[in-house]
Image (cartoon, rainbow, N blue to C red):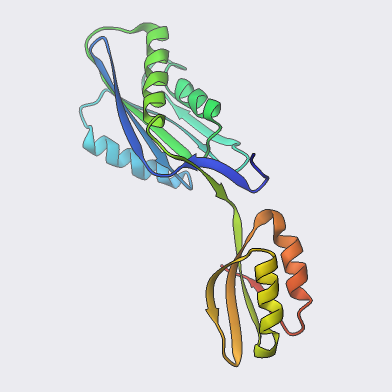
Length: 202
């Protein structure tokens, strides 16, 4: 069950191949964090497959899965990017880019054939991935006096916060991550510790 601050994505890139009536469809799936990643990945694929006829793709971004783009790269409209996206939608995964590289084999597939080929190539690429659940977190630094260390560490333990860095001397500091859905609750508790200075880490 997904919460408001979690989403499903893929752990690492994968690739697969699907052949249909002489055409070869290479499916590539990549985890991404921004739209800027798309250009980088497409540049690499176009360098590695310069003789391919088409590099069609679809992406989905955001914890609410609301950002998406499709590209048919010269295939008839709706026959490539949309089938790829629909497959992503059916898996409920986000922060992902799937590119299907097509080498034309001389036989026309027609609209239904193309839709099926791009969908199947996407499914083949996704069948080999590990789908993981990720959590959205905020990172904070908390500065405090040594005398407040027990109070701070008790909250860290109670709220199951993750410590990224720590420093315990005259000027103590911990850098922690807090799940988005519990930020207000944890920050309110930390603010009650006298002398604690809490800052959102950049």
